[in-house]
Image (cartoon, rainbow, N blue to C red; front, side, top):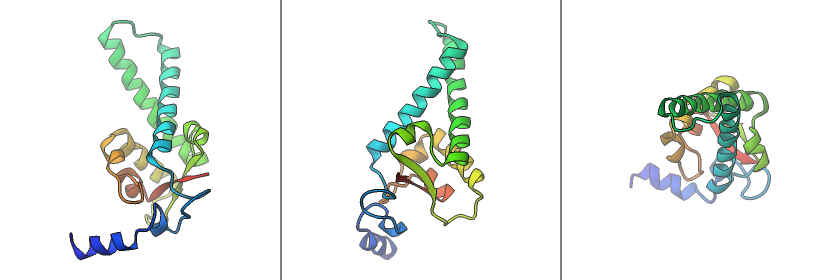
Length: 148
C-alpha cells in the first residue's frame, strides 16, 4: 500500500465524510442496495415502455435483440434527461436518492449527466467503486449519489 492510499484510508471515517457529507440522514451517501433498487426500477420502467411500444418479442431472437437495444437507448436518454433536469429519476426518487455535483469537475451539469449515464450503461464503471461508494461513472462526472 502506498503512502497516498494509507493517508486516504486514514481520512476515511464513513461513506461521504471526505466529501463533506453527513454520516446519516438527508445528504448522506446511501448504501449499494438502495442505489441498485433505484436502478432496477428505472430499468423496469424502460422495459415496460419499450414492450408497450414494440409489443412482446415472442421467440424471435432478432426482435428480442432489437427490444434490448431500444431499452438501453431509452434508459440512457431517460436517465440523462431526468438527471439533467431534476437531479433524480423516478426510481431514484422512489428510493429517496438523487445525484449531486461534488464540484471536483468543471463540467456543466447536463454534460456531466451524459458522461455519467454513458459510463453507467457500460456497467463496469458503475460496479467499480471507492470507499465513498462512488462508482467510476460518478468520479468521472464529478457527482455523488445522496439521500433525499
